[in-house]
Length: 615
Image (cartoon, rainbow, N blue to C red; front, side, top):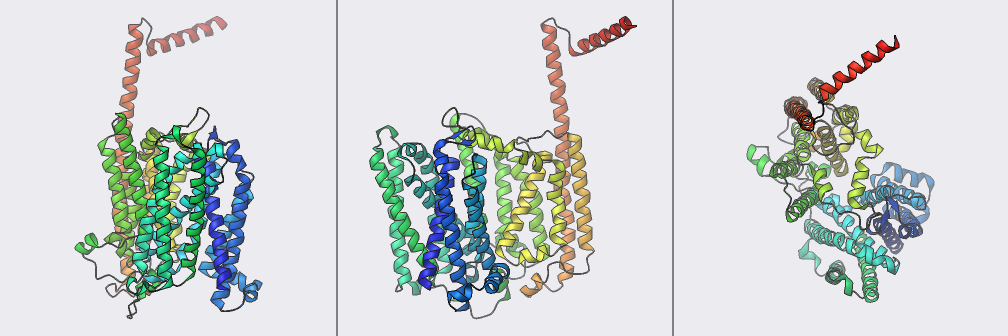
């Protein structure tokens, strides 16, 4: 039965990687025609349909054999409708696997219907989410330091899917399409390789017991996988070296090299499936029971002090990976501008770096660590993620930097990456989200839905839920401050008076939320903090009220700063408008033309004369 489980897991991974690689080729690697899929991309839709169907069928097999292994029964027991329904609706692992099946079926359904680049990109993002969902419930979560283990595993899977999937799709492309797709994929493959190697190393260091591993079959397979990966990296280096002189490339020999790379990739993937299906020699767990490890996967820290808050660090690998990627792309954009001879304001770079550092402190730093154990520290982290860090991100103007540095279309008809970003900014969805009322609802309205329902306690119970909260805080804050003080392009022009009204509304709503939180007489965490049994946290209700007061104090200051910034922007815009009118008037006078006031008076005289004539 284990052999069948491994086979289905392999089919699931191969199908998912081929699906992601095909969507990658359709959305980014091949040419588009003014935002629509080209003929070459449309040819890949059948491959996309077949890959997604293989993914769905393989994952269904994984569900059945996983359930049979858990029950210790034959596959016939797992096929019982009642047992199967209970697994996929009540058990977290079953729910994640069912979500993966649904995503695969959705991609298969839309595979033969998509015609636009934006729809392809949406399916690519959805596929990546569906692929990594079961990872959050993997065996790494129970090994301690799960923020490091789970996060690095997610990055590893995403990097592999883009790398392996891209190689598979390029190997299956028509020969005339490869010269177009390979140069762009070569750049993406470099980033993917770095992500795979670093995340794999970190995950192995966090989970494995190296003293006991070397004499096992698990170690031999790991070594074989390392050798295969080294060969793949070498082939990738040859790709980049050959692409440096594109005119002299022997594309037939290049195609054979790509085919060999794809075969090695598939073999390496099989090794990875075998490793994931067998028990790894993990580090021994400390005999002393710690409720915090069972609940949050983190050892209970000592009582908080200023030095511990500043110096402690519990790495959240996935969040760190996202922050490093964002910072690297921003730095690359600044370097591109500098080499071009253009200048980028240093203040914007400092603001963006400050926002990134604040997010890291609130998620992986000492504050992020203690936020798992006390509501008061959780609320401080919430304020930093939702109100302080977003201001730095927004003032860093990342969208403006992207528009100035992203590559243009490779021919006159291709929209390209920059054009796709512009189309997204002007889409109906962007217009909807940048509506001030919508931004305010996400910024302030969502906190009532989070903290005054069972949602908060449920999300705190898992790494995925905690990650979802953090990302929601960041995105809601970025959206709100982009609308009220943003310097990046906005699909709608919002008058300054409306911005000020929205800011005052945000202040009032936030104050009301804080007062309501301070007035609570029951705990809102559904028993989460009590289950941690933190020895230095005695009165949970008092800590909850302290969190409300800290949220009020910390939340009002950024909003007041946004109000001041809006007033200053209003004054500057009025001054620029007055200067523009003065310049137009001076220009008209120099050319012997009447100014705007004279033209307006002349219009009034003409209207009065027409009225007299009609009488």
